[in-house]
Amino acid sequence: VQLQASGGGLVPVGGSLRLSCAASGRYFSRNDMAWYRQVPGKQREAVAVVNVDGRTNYADSVKGRFTISINYAENTMYLQMNSLKSEDTGVYYCNAAWRPDPWGQGTQVTVSS
Image (cartoon, rainbow, N blue to C red; front, top):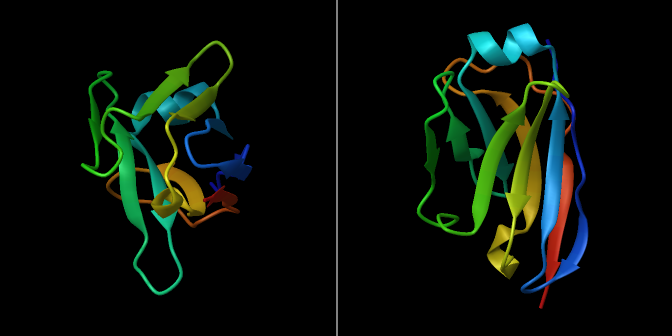
């Protein structure tokens, strides 16, 4: 399974974006899911995780600003990103949380100051 993230773009500091990731409902119900961010020169890091039981966890850098959710009716996972900062710039990927499948195409988020 290769999940494709979408919804990135260029936004000003303080702006908002919502990223999307489509998969089967069975995939979401069987896997803890995460949104990852990769910045050039750094390792890919998980910024938000949602467990199969609905619990969520966030990296300290995005806590209070990002919200991860899954809409099972739409078979889509979202990452709502508010109050964006320049350091949020990067390529965002969606994948299973603890044992990622092969990486699909990410989506570029650029926050301009």
